[in-house]
Image (cartoon, rainbow, N blue to C red; front, side, top):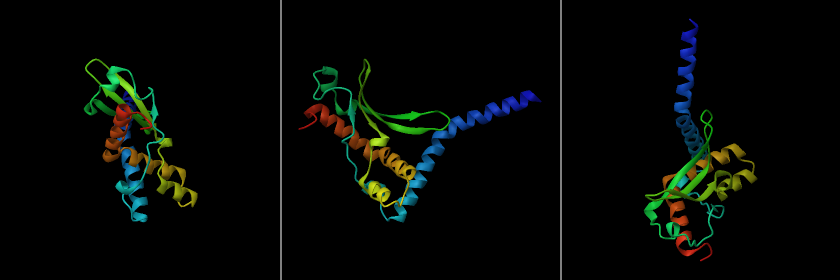
Amino acid sequence: MSWFYGISLLLAFGVTIMTSKYFYFLNITKTTENLLNKYCTKLEDLDYSFEEIVYFYSLPSHISAINQATKSQFKIKLDYSHFLMTQLNGVYIEIESDHASIMLAYLPVDDFMLPFLDELLNAKKIGPRTSQKVSQAKLIHPDTLNEIVNEVYNQVQFGRYN
């Protein structure tokens, strides 16, 4: 009988690990939808800035693998913590080539703030957890990820302050 409980426990643990990202994204999506519907706005309409992107190389770079990379080589990699209680920490931007991947930049979720959420936080209409969930939803939105790639590519090509 104890082997049955052991197998059941192992199966439950495996299912929890396999579905944790799904339920994490579902939680973020529902929280974001509820908040934005309450204020009659859309996720696509929220403004944000790229000021807090951390670059691992000085730009423009003299490393040929970086400055000769095409935009199609720039890829996004989501940075998660934990398997059991998944949480998005940030977004890595890397250059993929035939030889290796170069980790070029990182945007932490905690530094990805939106003015709309700042106003609601200051007015105490939402809490920090809700703000973080909406920030995460905006950060992983395909349009935002595409704009992040465009921004990093432009910084690599033209420099940070041009």
